[in-house]
Amino acid sequence: MARSKTRDEILAAATRQFAESGYKGTSLQDIAAEVGCSKATLLYHFDGKDAILTELCAPAIAELADLDARVAAATTPALARELAIEGFVDLAMRYRKEIQVIYGDLPALLQQPALRPVHELTEQLVVTLAGGSAAPTALLAAKFVLAGLPAVVFACTEYDDATLRAALIATAARVLEPLT
Image 1 (cartoon, rainbow, N blue to C red):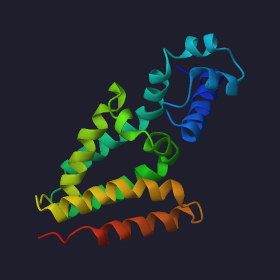
Image 2 (cartoon, rainbow, N blue to C red; image 1 turned 180 degrees about the horizontal axis):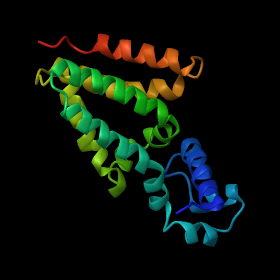
Image 3 (cartoon, rainbow, N blue to C red; image 1 turned 90 degrees about the horizontal axis):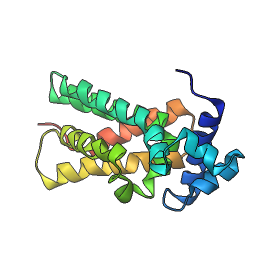
Image 4 (cartoon, rainbow, N blue to C red; image 1 turned 45 degrees about the horizontal axis):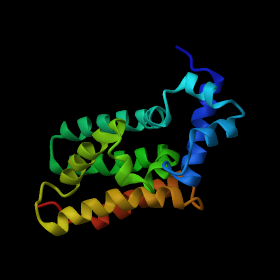
């Protein structure tokens, strides 16, 4: 089923509005005004702001779940970590706008039904990046990588994607404790 132009315009406007004013600070009227449609038209396409957020984040969440499956299928901890680092860097770069949208309101947004899987999936990545270690330094380094990497992705516009990707992968590998 093809999406309508208005639906795509609503999603694009919502992304800009959420990034600029935050999820909580954006109203349906703000989004409708940017699109140039009525709030009723917006509600014809989406049940509400939560539905817009759900559709915006669904592709990234699906890819995060796919990354989790690829990491889980890895045959060694080293391969699992490599897949997790590269996969998360690629995911963060591909969805940098969506990450910027949710980053500021992250704690509250993770309570949204559509985003609840993100917490579980990222906790699995933490375990993988920590190499299965329960040591606080290993776990904190893994959380540091997962929390800091998206912030760098949407803040660093001065580098081309290939340079940024390579630097992020190398930096993440340096931050994490060696696998034993």
